[in-house]
Image 1 (cartoon, one colour):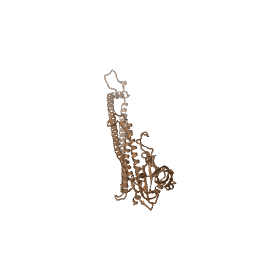
Image 2 (image 1 turned 45 degrees about the horizontal axis):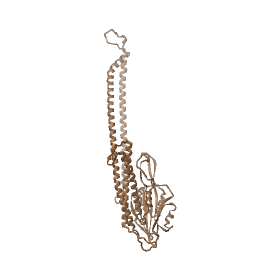
Image 3 (image 1 turned 90 degrees about the vertical axis):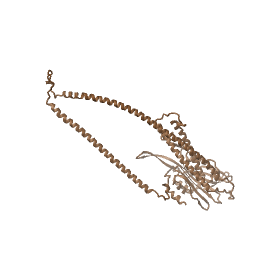
Length: 518
């Protein structure tokens, strides 16, 4: 039965990660004192990566008030995200995010193997979000069953519960690993700096707060206690993040003026303010979508817990001497009550998420209308400026037309006066008392026309040759542009065909065991 989990476990949707190579990790353990049934928590214990065997061997100890028996132990692996800048040929400098764990991958695999969680660890990375129970394994000493909860890439819970047979001093031992993001508790929702941030409690911090709370021993010893911890952690994260979104949303509403079902004032926002508010509102919408996903995951966890409890019967607690069963609180009923409380909270949180998302959508629409309004005002101002520019251009054109008319009026006279001022006419031989207007010309008058006419023709020929060269240059540039565009289009089509062929080659058949990836 384990073949399907082992074969699917070769797929890793969590991706590669780096390590800080720390030599120790934190654990939380719970001890039961049989004499009075008290639970003694041991939180914050640090275990070295080279002393894992020594940590796992200690299952019974002598306390100050009597013998104490281990009932649960959990190891914590911290996940963080580091941002690194790198140069890209197309986008320039880009920021790359990389997942980092606090201990090496070799230590993680060793812990998972010795806790009996190797198969669960491999299989849990083959899906993004969900919960599963692996087949139970039995031997002459105990029956063990592993479980896994995945919420990639920030949370992963693995645990196995061993139910021992008499005459063992242990009834059950729950051994688990929590891979949790240890963030600083804030989430940036815009790109202008660090001043606008949403409170986002880290998974590890919230999880430890829940585990430090006092719980009944039947809750600690129940198989579904890690599911309850995860669901409670997600529920508290949803509530905390949503409260931060509402705080930021009220600031956006006060700036846009669209709230309380009316527009109280007309905001005076420039382009930069509108862009910042728009980025912030879209960030809120993204966070709310993430909360909806987390809420849906929590609902799946609760359904899984109820389904598992309906299948299993509450184990009868043995006396410390291994005798007849003793009366005890029903762990199924107690945990079912706790899960029902979370289920009711989840229903109200879903309603609140939908309402908050609607408020965010109203602000996005309001910002869109404000941007459109500013665009209209800018276009109106541009139209007015264009009209004024057209008027001044018309006035300048009229002035130029007047100058051209005046120039044309004086041009013939200017040409004649310039021509008469040359030495081609014998003005000295003119009889000023005579009524004749004739003037004798010199032989150089013909030379004037011999030089002027060819030079004029040569000037016009040169002008037309220059126009022809410019036209040829434009036609050649346009032809080269068309050729380059055709080559680029052909290259893109070739790449698209190659990618399409690769997709067809890598597609799985419908009846394959991997068909869930389709």
